[in-house]
Length: 173
Ligand code: FEO
Image (cartoon, rainbow, N blue to C red):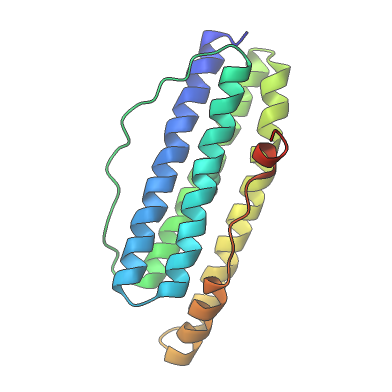
């Protein structure tokens, strides 16, 4: 059984993951409006992954006999001044999510909830990958600056990204 402090913190994280999904869907729409369908695909995969993150936590709360309580999803931005600003925002956001996961882990530590600590380990590792992949894209975008061919190549590369279900979900099916 989850204690209420951990349960509330997990519910808050479910909302944060769904907000992340909504943010990336908005970024996907922005990229389509700029004619960048490959980069839009990359954000669509982000959108799918964030839904997985919410689902993993949802399933976990249920498995521990807790109660999932869905809250409203706050508004997300719809416009950015340039493509690079979209990825700067993405990196800042992922760094913020890392701090949320760390805070959540800390609550599980304080409450001596070892099962939640174990479940959160996957998220801690995932955040390292999330930040690294966005940082790489930002580095490439800074390299090419306004070079149209470079942007074409990045759009092509990110267009090849394929969604795969997060392992904690596929392992339970
Ligand atoms: Fe759910 Fe991108 O962190």
